[in-house]
Amino acid sequence: MTSRSTITPVGVPSALALTATLLSVSTASAEPGIRGNEPYTTDRLLMSLCNGRTGTQERLINVQTGELRALNSWADEQAAALMVKRDSGSGRFTAVLNYRHPSQGGVPSTATVDSIARVHHTTPRIDRICTVTMTSSNGFRSLYTLAYGGYLIHMNASHDASYPVTVPTSTASRTKNLITGTSYPPNSTFVMAPQTTAVWALT
Image (cartoon, rainbow, N blue to C red; front, side, top):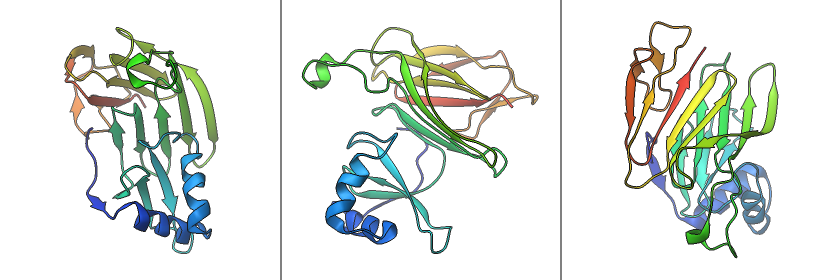
């Protein structure tokens, strides 16, 4: 997992209680509400919560561990999920790569790549939820690539293989990886270590 903000472990019961408070629902109804929220569809993924009373206390909750973290740009290669939050003009971009990939009887070891990604892109002018195509370099748990709007995403979901990628050209003199905040010369070679992600800002 890459570039995560400070994590505060609170435990699942406390996290569900907080969720219930923020969403003004009972704790009993909060859990299935979290688990069914799009695009965060599995226990390993995260749900975004916003306290509407202040408009500023926005957090992410991991419904498997009960951990909370500040809302920021992050990627979770195990779950093939990511989120980028930019300035108010660019909004927020979330994606789940290899979305709802097939497996036999839900057994993880039988999972295969399906070349589908689920995207949610929000700006002051648009709010889009899309199902789009992506590519993989070598099947399941390899280098996933997704191009959408002003973003190019490289996610190395492998646990042991590295992949070289070419840094794309952007409107700036250097292209920024929004997950790490580091900028690189366009057309240079960037090596993706196992379980790392680059979200390149093209605009």
